Image 1 (spheres, rainbow, N blue to C red):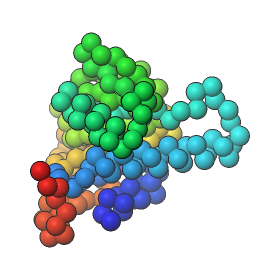
Image 2: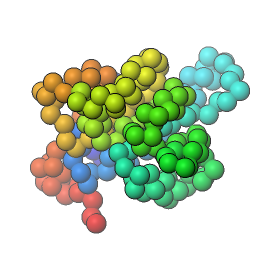
Image 3: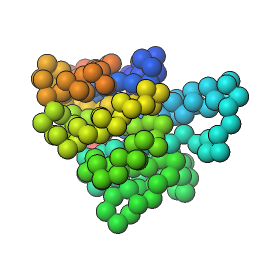
Length: 192
């Protein structure tokens, strides 16, 4: 229920914002649901406007902090029956750009066009793009170019009052919180 509520809040906030959910509460599943809803809304909007594009796919860029998370999310998408040919990974020697592309923050810095081509960008551990991470903060310079791009930040740890997170608070304001104490109380933590 809390995951569906999070997705709903994100959609009703214009497909932009950050969800602050503690570790083990299903942030990845929330991200997948948000992506599904954004893609569905995009297809409906395109159909209603009777616009025809040569590439009518909804491109999703899923940014993670570490390479090990690329493989983990790739496998999870396959488990959700997403065809392998629709999922690309972009890091190191592997440069597969697909409808869903999973990359690291470090890799996308070297190819900011990945952000530009995406209809939606998911920022896993968004707090890593703080004001002190000057190189990573360039990502937001590109993100704000397109006001129609769906943006989802995910984190368990961010201090909203810390000035280093001013850009995140502006571009991806916090929408819904699910702290660890609530997750424990509701018995919602994922089991290992």
